[in-house]
Image (cartoon, rainbow, N blue to C red):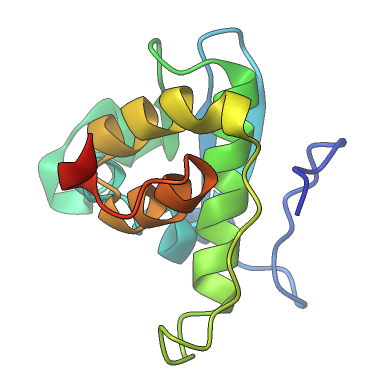
Length: 135
């Protein structure tokens, strides 16, 4: 699966309420819109947008990531959508997400920062590594 060339929001049919949309902004200014449920796949983002936090990200529904470039954030967003789409499937039935090897190190770094352990699981097969302990 290749990332979207246009930055469409890929939101489910039926427009969600504006409060259910989160904008993710990369270090180079690229913006991606995801649903709140998709964004909350990341532990870091979930805490940033928690209304009880009073963080500016929660108030503005906008998260800027100075350490993640647009190409990497695009893959992260694709993963969020992929995981959300397949969330009701048995883990063994979910098809592998195709990740180009040249993106693996950036995605591992982003997954670590975003506390997205499941994204890490999809990166290791692209590196032909069976587990994180093999590094």
